[in-house]
Structures are given as structure tokens and as C-alpha cells.
Image (cartoon, helix red, strand yellow):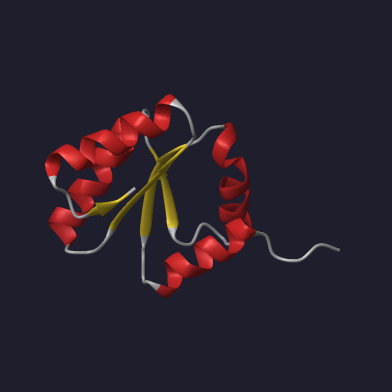
Length: 96
């Protein structure tokens, strides 16, 4: 039997920070994190976007309209660049 994985601890920390939603785009680089959502009963809730940049946009909109922290996740490579550049340009309250 194996113990908790790093991804389980990451979701545990997000719950401790009272993060309710994470917007993201799945890919090989975060499959372990997506598996952790399955083990955690989808808490915080994972909302799948159609593109990495859209996940960042959704996180920013969520943060601006709810006053809560907006969080987005995406796979490595070009997806990371698309996701991270947009919020930086907008001086957003989202964490990507």
C-alpha cells in the first residue's frame, strides 16, 4: 500500500487556503494532480477549460467577481506559457 502523493498534499493545501475552484486544462504533465482530484472527491472543484489561456482567464474572472483566490492549472510546455503570460499582462489576482 502506498501513502499520500505530493499531489494529494497540494490539494490538501488548497483546501486549507479555502480554495473552492481550480480552472485547468489536463495534459500529461498534471495527470498525477488530476488523479488526486479523483481521490479527493473533486475538492476543490476542478473546472476543465478548452485551452490553457482560457483557464487563466476563467481564474481571473472568478477572482475579480467573487473576491476569492483564482487558481488555474495546466500541463507543462507551451500550455504553461499560454497560461502564465495572460494573467501577468492583466495584473490579475489569480494564482497560476
